[in-house]
Amino acid sequence: MLYKDLMLGLYFFAIDMRGNLCYILSMEENKVENSSMCAKCGGLCCQKSGCGYIVKDIKSFKFVDLKALLDEGNISISAILRKGLVGGRLKTEKILVLKARSIDKGIVDLVSASTQCKMWTPKGCSYSLADRPSLGAGLIPDINQGCRRNIYDYDKVLDEWKEHQAGLEKLVKVYTGKKMEYVYEEQFIKTVALVWAKRTLARGDISLLTIGEQEILSMIVEASDDMAYEIKQAKELAAKFVKNTIKNAEQS
Ligand code: SF4
Ligand code: SF4
Image (cartoon, rainbow, N blue to C red; front, side):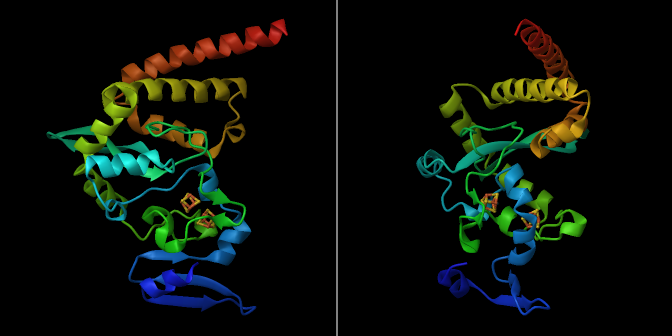
């Protein structure tokens, strides 16, 4: 944590039994840090994916400013699925958001079995606490409970992102030349097919998948009612991947 972070808000500190500084909570900024617990864990959350921004983190939503921010190379556009009432029907909606970029992922990373965040180092996050995406800085470290709680209400965060869908969809079109729905469909089919093929080749042993890949499997369950076409396509593609992999292995 840098000196400037300390100047930004009201901080509370906790000291562990050995007298080490272990907990920093900034009430003003809704950011929390438990450096000793995270050091022991080794950054599991950051190794599975880059964390999410909230709308307030982004200084300007003007098209040119957002594009310049994405071109810097550390942020991706991602899509979150959420089940909710749309026009009186329970539907899965896709909400575009911004997140810290994962290694080897592009600007438009709508459906990815994410990998380690680009900003993660063996010493932790390379951003200061104040500069960290809010959903990462708001994650309450609690290894015993799987670090599932966040200072931020995720539904509210997504509701705020819904106000910016048109601008983010325009950026998806600029970077890919395609409408968001097509890009989502392509990325969903390819990503899900690869994860399924990997699971089949691992003889169903989920532990051989990365955490990001395991999350994709839960996402499919969530989306299954509304994405029957994409799921069918992914199944067919997965079968081809498996067949080709076995054939190549037999020939070599
Ligand atoms: S927040 Fe939880 S998962 Fe992330 S580094 Fe800290 S202890 Fe590990
Ligand atoms: S930006 Fe920092 S806190 Fe967020 S996932 Fe990356 S390394 Fe972790």
